[in-house]
Image (cartoon, rainbow, N blue to C red; front, side, top):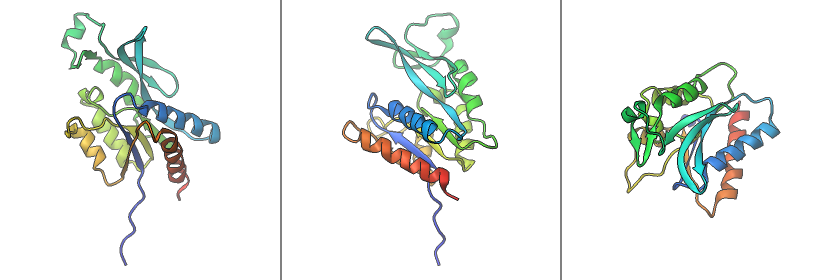
Length: 195
């Protein structure tokens, strides 16, 4: 008799930039909060910072509302000269770590982790990916977003998540947003109620 394959405990949502990955994750989070208020959900999401119609950066926001800078195209302090860059953005690794790392601590009683996102900016932190892997190995369900490979090439840490045996990768596009939100919600509820 073949051994049963353990059900996936990690849903990774991917898709092109601007397709709505963060919006999907936040709507699922809000629906879970409303339908199952007893759940202990830890994590963070990233939000665009805009000046008028121009995107000038990103900030990290914890699920309990604390926030701080992740990256900016407008910052030009002496300290920021040493920060890593992604495109036109300077990445504030210290701010990311101060907000995201405490949210990625595996603690008794946590029902779900939300990680938006595991991408190039976040992976500049040498502590971030090990924390994500500890969460993944904890057997606590995870809903996370990852970037789509660029020109067929994946970021090494992202590739490790994508290929993890406990991960299910779902690709979001403009045509499947509503169906995908319901699908992700249903899968998470099944994970959270599995014995």
